[in-house]
Length: 264
Length: 372
Image (tube, rainbow over the protein chains, first blue to last red):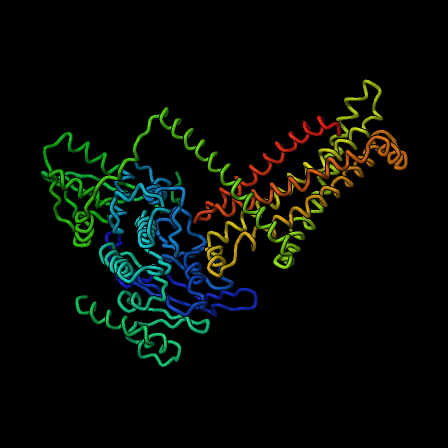
C-alpha cells in the first residue's frame, strides 16, 4: 500500500527455480521471476502453457516440484493464514464467490474472520469495497447467481480487496466479458494500482490488458519465462513471442496502447 | 477470531500538540475500532476539532473511510502526507451508501409463505412425476416396438454400473441383514422354546421383504443418485441442449437406457441378495443353533414356498422403475449451478427410498388380501 510503506523499487514477490511437472509432462522448467512493489506484472502465454499453474504456485495453492516462492522476503509456506490473507488477494477466473452468501457477505467474510470490528463497521467497509470495485452498495444484497459476468468479476475483486492486500493476483480478469466491460475492468485495475499502490500480478491472454496495463510482462513459452517490458518484448525475435505480439489480434491492442499512453 | 501471530500488532497513539490532536502510528483495519474509540474520548473532553496526520505512518482504505467520515463531521485534517492524500481522495470521492437491509418478514408470515411454497412444490412435483412417467413409458414403449432404436451398448453399460459393480456391497448387506434377523429371532423365540423357527423367520423375511428392500435401498443410494448427478451435470453444462439441437431426444438417449438397465438389474440383484441372505442364515444357523447345512436346506424348503420367493422378486422391477424414473427426473430438473446438482441428488435419493418403502407397505397389504 502506498500508505503503509514508502514506494521504492523493492521486490515483493520472487520465485526461484520453479519446476512443475504432471506425470512425465514438464510444465515449468526452473522459472524465476521478481515482482517489484507497486508494479503491474503480466503473465502471458498460450493455452496450456501453465499460466494458471504458475499463478497457483505463486499464491501458495500449488506446491511446486522444485523451487521456492518468497513473498515479502519469507517463503510462502511459512506465512501464517492471517498474514497471508492480509498480504495477498486473489481474483479467480470464475470469481469463486461463495454461492450461499450475498455479495456483501462475501466481502465481509474475511473482515469478520480476521478483525474484531462491529457488524455496522464491517458493513460500512464492505459497502466501500464494493464502490471501489465499481459496484453500487445496493447490489450488496444480491446473490452471486443473480449477477452478470462483469458484476461477478467486480464483486470478486471487491472481496479480494477486503483486507487491503499488498499484492493482488488476477486470473484472467477480462475473460468472458464484452469489450466495454473488459475495458472497464482494465481501467479499474489501473486505478486501484495507482491510488492504493497495490502490486498486481495479472494472468491473461487478453492482449489489450497486456498492452495497456502492464508495466512488465512475462511470457511463458517452451516451459521457460521471458520477462521484459512490453517495448522490449515487441522487439523479441523469438518466433512465438513475435507471432503472439504482432498477430492480427495485436493490432487493436496496439492502437489502444497508443491511445492510453498519450494520457498516462 | 484468528490473529497473525508472526506479525507484531500495529500500534497507534493519540497525542495533543498545542490546540490540536495528533494521530501517530497505524490507522488500519486492525486498529480502526480502537482509534475511533480513543478519538471520541478525546473529543468529549476538548473543543479542538482538528486532527494532525503528519506522523501517521500507515493508512489503509478502512482507515481512510474513518478519516473521511470525520472530515464530513467538520473535523479538520491537517498535515496530510501526500501518499495518504491520494487514498483519502479516492475514498472521499466514492459515492458511499449504506448496504440495503434485507426486508424483515415476521415469523408467522414466513411460516405461511413456506407452507404455501411447500404445497406448491408438492403439487408441481406430483405433476412432474406423472408427466415424466408418461414420457418414459411412451419412450420405452416406442423403443420396444422399434427394437432397432434401443441403445444396447448404453443399456449394457448401465447394467454393468448399476448391477455388476454393486454385487459385493449388496451381497455383504444381505448377509448382514440375515445375521441381524437371526440374532433377534433366537433371542425372542428362545423363551418359548422355538429357536428352530428362527430359520423360518430368516428365510421368509429375506425372501419376501428384506432381500428386495435392502437391494432397492442400496441401488437407490448408489445408482439413483448417480443418474441424477450424471444427467444434472450434463444439463448444467448444456450437453442436454446440445443433444436437442442435434435432433436427438434426451429421453431416448439418456433416460430410457438407464431405466431399462436398472429394471433389468434390480431383479437379478434381488435374486442374488436372496441367495446371499439364505447363505448368511445357514452360517448363523450353524453357529447359533448347531444346524448342519443339509438340515438347514431341508428346513428352509419346508418353511418357504414359491410364492414367498416370487412375491419378493415381483416387487423388484417396480421398485427399479421408480428409482430410475425419480433419479432421471431430478437430473433433468437441475438448473444452472453445481449447487443445484447437489440439491436435486439429495431430493432424488430421499424420494426414491421413500416411495420404495411406501410401495412395499402397499404391496404387503395387497398380498395379505390376496392371500399370497
